[in-house]
Image 1 (tube, rainbow, N blue to C red):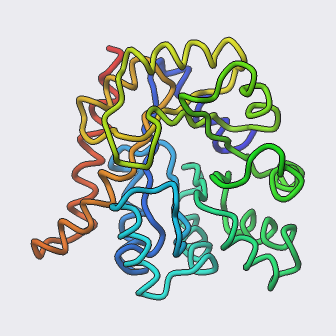
Image 2: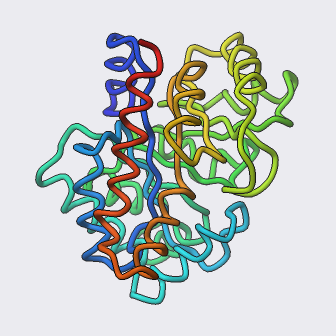
Length: 275
């Protein structure tokens, strides 16, 4: 059982949904990001998505685009992202970490490190549990998904409001860990999800799979996180968190403390949602 599978099994046993938090690796700089990463579990994060910085994050809105630019401007890379995970694992061997991003940085890393298998070996050794690669559809599973499964790394797929019952089996075929349901059509941080529509979508997906379903896009505060936690297995929050980094910098605050304060609000709301 992977860390991801164990965490969702534990959440189910507790009778509650989880909180999945997204931050961009190296944002606003390597040292501050390391402090944020180490503080996330105690603040309430059950699973951590660590965004791999990339120059062209086409599925992401302005907030995460800006986070990518901040990180890259301060020397972030996939190799340094793995360093963050490796350092995190020195004190936390339980919290699942998922790398989320695009295939280009992985392909570039693989070219210099013995291919995709070399990347997966390095990621696994560092302590990575899963991958979300938003621009690799099921038709490209040979590129990374199947090698990841062989290496013992969960490959987590995204479903959207336009993923109909004809397409869903292909999306689910090699997915493991959990399924990430994108609650709105469009880029990250663009709009708020409709909890009734999300409930219907999660129920439809559950007719096709026993995988946990995490729901993200548009969750910005405890109230919305709780609404999603009542109908899904996890609430996924990203844009609202990376915005706290920019906000802290603009106000002269500590980005780590400012971001983790919101995580505590979200974590408390998610934990109370089903009481």
